[in-house]
Image: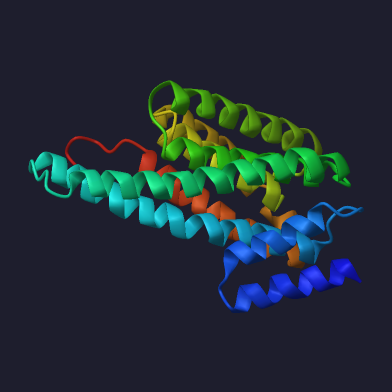
Length: 238
């Protein structure tokens, strides 16, 4: 009964757009006995995504504002802007560390199959990536190393256990490539990873079941968009 109550609270928090409280309910579910059902997994993913997403958007706006103030030598409110950025950074760090801790201690040990292991290891990589976005220097590098390790582990599991067209495998490739481009500043490696995943999957699209088709095609489109974006253009523009 307790599990059902927390699921209901999570759904209620979702419709009320109180995503931090949705996270709290889903954390309690994860700490109970048993692996997550499909519905519980979706609720957990959505709760953390929405909770961190608003802060990431806020951070980008504040960070941009701060940079412009520095460029224009506008010092009057610079310290207040910096303090506010750091406040949002602390919130992002708390959410990301909390998510990774939950995955390591409660979710992965009860993962029912290799797909779940691959998916939640990728999710760890995602939240380390969000952490890296708001850090600099040695701390950013240390977090980037943890992020890289998580994506590599997820990729290894997915490559060994899942079809090239599986949505989880494609999602891992997509986000792993984004890590290389945005955090590791290695667009060549990002491009190669995305191309490999796309090429391996595109020849097998005809084997997809109707239930899996939409998710896999959507991820293939995202990979294709990134490949086009990252591919160097000739100097003459043609």
